[in-house]
Length: 322
Image 1 (tube, rainbow, N blue to C red):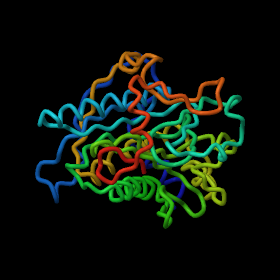
Image 2: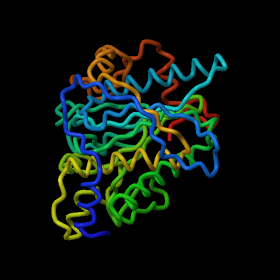
Image 3: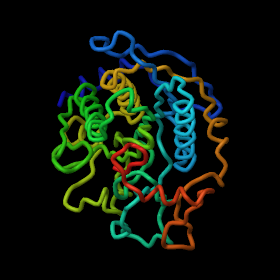
Image 4: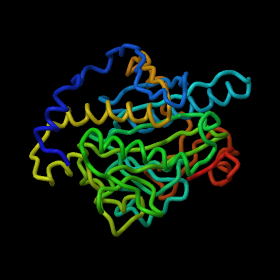
């Protein structure tokens, strides 16, 4: 791990994105950070960059599902289907996978400290909140590798490269445990859903996250290991404190760079009105969440057959939980 001076020097060299009002429009630009050794013409990836915004989980979840359906329609029409990626932070929330057990909640779900959502992704319960960068790749694996294990390992590779290149933190995988680890601490969680080879959900990297809410759950159902953050690892290494916003900035820039290079994609940032694009998703949109009067998930999907799909595991790529 490099010294605090080197980390501070690297951070200070990046463009700083201060928190601004929610009506800010972002400038669309193409980020040419791909590696052209293997692909002369990399596929483009539309990037919705809200990394410095706190987006309610339900709205982002609905947004993902709409993009997935749009991509399925394009594929059915034999039209070009560019990849997409969403980068953001969430307001505090607990999320669970399709088959998650309530045994890993250290609270009564009817009196939860934050909202709890049961989703269609794989994996057990986790926490999302400020200071955690969440990346939702919505990509067509037909254009990459139609192999779900390859996809999981590749997401891990993105984070491992980010920690190494941006912070000189040596991270690794652990056999049988999805995610990215530094020693005994899990710094990035991964949970995905794949429908007709279109991916959604994704990865969450703890950058400056307050880790206290993880004490109310058994993160990812793993009892004998800890959760860590980039900020905590730097401070534990006796490098002192580094500004939170600068840590978020450097991690954000590195995530996009490494994602682009590992997946061989050309990132094209999209113009987004932060408020307007999310206000499209009304509270009654499709979701599976915990009602505060119930101890089990209530399906609010408009079509009953969807609930059946949520529990089906297939290796065909049609509907798969990992």
